[in-house]
Length: 451
Image (cartoon, rainbow, N blue to C red; front, top):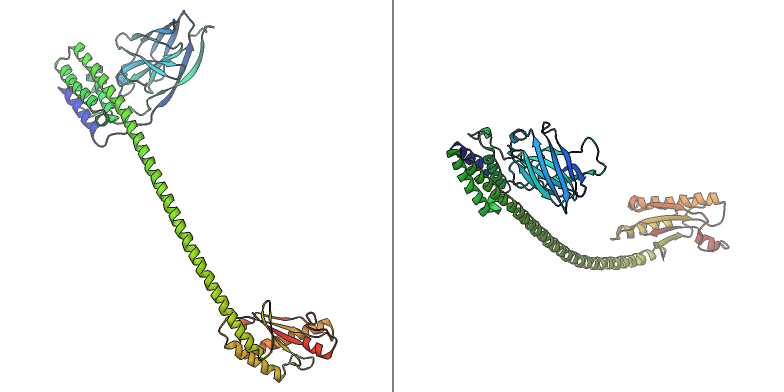
């Protein structure tokens, strides 16, 4: 009765919450492998590990006719529950030189020896503590393994090799129930093994992915709990039930893990397909958006070109009107930088930068035209002289006369910000030869460049 209650409580506890996803696929172990001679019996020691240092034993192996026959004898195996809270059994494994592993046999606690065969000629042996005997991959709890004899045999060659087992923490999380009313020490190991097998099948989502097989194992477990609690002396009966329960639970475990992986693979495939479709949709949307943006850009470029053309036409019209207006006041020409209004002739006192009344009148009229001009403009004022006098004198005089023109225009209301530059070039930029009085008068000028 108490055993049945314990199993029910344990299974109920394990079933709470969401199903647990399988942990990492495996852990890596390493052990010794030996190449056996043909047709000769070889006896090798079995040594305990730090998990069970008292274990001793031997393996008598004969490789003949393509198979190795193994007789394994062990002594001083501790109660498996001492090696881990979820362990109930010991299993011997053959580790092959191709890194694969075979379940050789479950080791009985009473006789502690087994026999078996394998096709491997180069092999190692490990003994692990397990939750039940029918497991298909070893746990990380290795309690003994094959070793080399003290005296070396020249016919034996050996090396170490890795193998894959279940993850280190697979049997440590969510599988024991310390609050159960029946302590494990009072429960037969085969019954515990059956409970462990069902619990593991539940952990890997057996009820979801292998429901018929899991339900069958659960039904057998209920029958097992009733049998061993009501007839505890009928060991043969409940041991058989326990083994069949563990076998069916292990089948549910294997199917559930396979099907859960297939479901995850399918979910991954669907997500990948959805991602691909989203990417294609995003790419198409980007292409559509790019095409629309290109069309908008072309339209904006066309409108901008039209605006520039209209602005250029307006500027040309304004400049033409400005040219006409200024030409009526001063000698004006069109240059690369804009209009050039020349204040030429006798406009200054001799050898001075003082404007004569006629020059002031012209500049006053020019200021009136510029102040009424609706467009943007800048003024560059450049002073020039003829060739009379030294270069230094002419340079200074031309600059002073340009500054005098600038000051007068500012007095008339032209903003100083519209006159960024005032230069004196002296005799360096004549517009006529300095060979006659008339030509020298042409060269004595102030050019007002309207940009």
